[in-house]
Length: 187
Image (cartoon, rainbow, N blue to C red; front, side):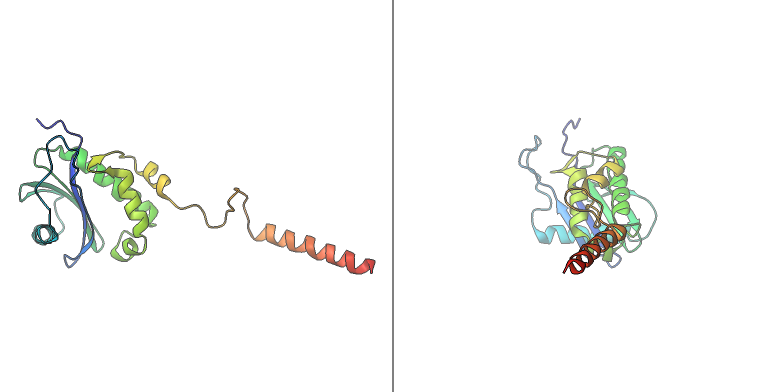
């Protein structure tokens, strides 16, 4: 029985032609089962991804056993997101992690989980992934919590937390204008 916390071996995003958009392979040295010999070279990774895409390019299922690995995947517009794990892992746990990651990314990318949005917001995608998976260990499956920890601060707020909007700018302008008029009137 596998009692290790290290459940995820890789996270991969492939586009509609099978080209890698993003890939992160986990090979922790502290894994109690020892280091994995899978996916050590880029050539091995690309070959695995090519075969995986051939098996999953058509929309349909969401779980397969491929090349001795449990693969959970989710189609979204023009990309496919994959979690790759060992064959003895619990697919429900991995499915919950994948769904929460997809939901958090959907929230952060404003309902456009597509190749262009992923590449333009790669920093958010990687932060979101790191909040979900840490070195192969699933650490969080709450999509709103993940998204809130990753989201950028609002653009219209100041560092000290004061809201600066059009009305406060107009008020400041009017105050300065009145003070200048008073000074000119005193001369």
